[in-house]
Length: 202
Image 1 (cartoon, rainbow, N blue to C red):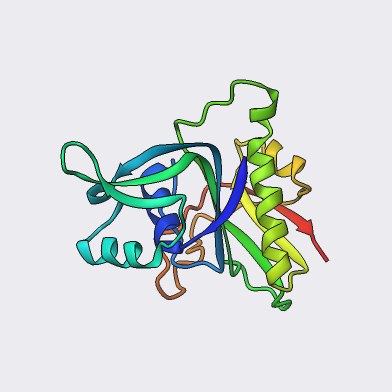
Image 2: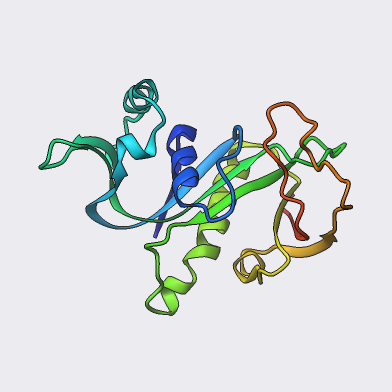
């Protein structure tokens, strides 16, 4: 599996179509995808993946990589293709919680596409490899001391542990809590109990 950086326009639409519980975050610092194989693979129809023609055009203009492209299929529909199948995507950005240390960042979204079903032990390691490689690429460019991320209380988080994260605390919201919804452009908060994971990187 190879890991590469992608534009937020591409990341956002993957989350909006494939993430089981959340839409895409408002923004990002960096986003990365894990891709396996070398044959061209259809991700989905552009009219489904994008909200408008303007968004498609912006994506098309910003995509200069040889392994992600927009093209028409045999029926004349505009389709997003990747050279290889997408395993998952990870986005790193500013933390939702307020930290005094400005070099703390958060993995704000992780999503593994439904078509990714590991067939062997090597493929079972892809989720943690995606996280590890994305972090390595991120900290090479941006000064970072810690990375934090959150998962739902009913999730195991094994792939995070394999990627070097440790459980930090359980986040239990008060029934009257507004979460981070009082911050500008925030969507309705998910107030289910979560586990925070932390990894020191510097």
